[in-house]
Length: 252
Ligand SMILES: [Zn+2]
Image 1 (cartoon, rainbow, N blue to C red):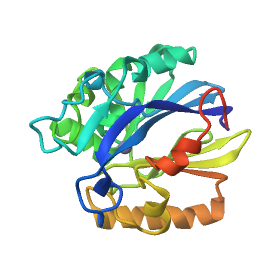
Image 2 (image 1 turned 90 degrees about the horizontal axis):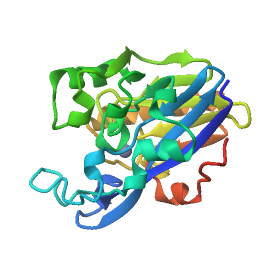
Image 3 (image 1 turned 180 degrees about the vertical axis):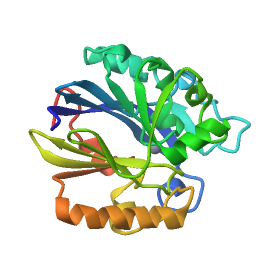
Image 4 (image 1 turned 60 degrees about the horizontal axis):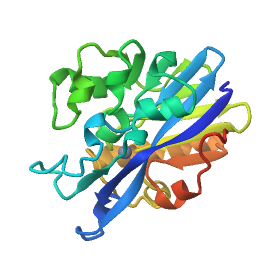
């Protein structure tokens, strides 16, 4: 069982609104919250996702000249970097006993270089991409050879109260996380299995690597959650939900 789960805001990105709903016309940018999550366990603290890379700080032009130009614009301040965030909550990267990456997109694994001594849990399919050195998908920050990726396959419970659920679709090896805490009980953090509640509940199609797989993952998790009845289901980048979310020092 997890002692405490904290929501840690980790800066913002501006993204084309069609990423959240494929039927919407391109051309309108919306600003979304990036999240990390801190899990305090009896064995020590564990971090879920490491936020955006240092190279995004004060660099809205990061994607200029790439296929993402005008589609993704980083809005990152120095205090949004994972090392600063952890410092604000009283930790340094070395204190983490493990890191979990939901997937290797830039807004979820950008801080990985700061955890060279820490096992980083990812799914096999995501690991394959790192191994291939595909920088169009995984940021160079994720490809550093000294990172200690710990590869898992399917649904696993690497620590009591933390279940990694294989939810491919948004990315080839995406995983969601079911956490059970002392205070709140089961909490499903979908991460980018669904950007928003409507992606999850109403099947509104969003930005995916494989839309069929994404649908299947959502269906599978919905069925699983009928049994578990989580007290919170938190989506990857849902502004309506995110704006209301209580963050550190509030815990769940
Ligand atoms: Zn994301």
